[in-house]
Image (cartoon, rainbow, N blue to C red):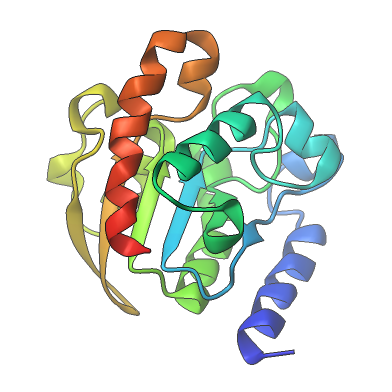
Length: 194
């Protein structure tokens, strides 16, 4: 098994055994991440939902079906990208992530990014976008996702330059079918990073 695979497997073990916040007591399965360990594109959501909590796989419910459709629009397959969340465990009743949970959990995400070394990170929704823009000294760019979706921000990381592209969370199209065209247009930017 290549070194990258071993390193990500080690993170998986750490997350399975993690007890840094109370979410470990209410989850069924942690959702570590899934996809290509050599991916040029990493997509980051906010937290697992009910379907993900049952399966341990990211974006496997309704929002996941929409995500697959959006990736297809960009000429990509799920297997070509890496998909994860800022939280690895589901918050009860799908409530918003709390600051202390984000602080406890994001070191795992940071390790994943350092191992995979993507060229582009798509932040799905406000929580992932805010976290990434703060992390990479782009706090002055933070605005609601409706204002900055589809824009590209360059960030200096431990593994080189990366583009951060805020995107609407696919769940927005579950609740508002008319948003799907906006999401498809935004996702087309991913083609540049294939």
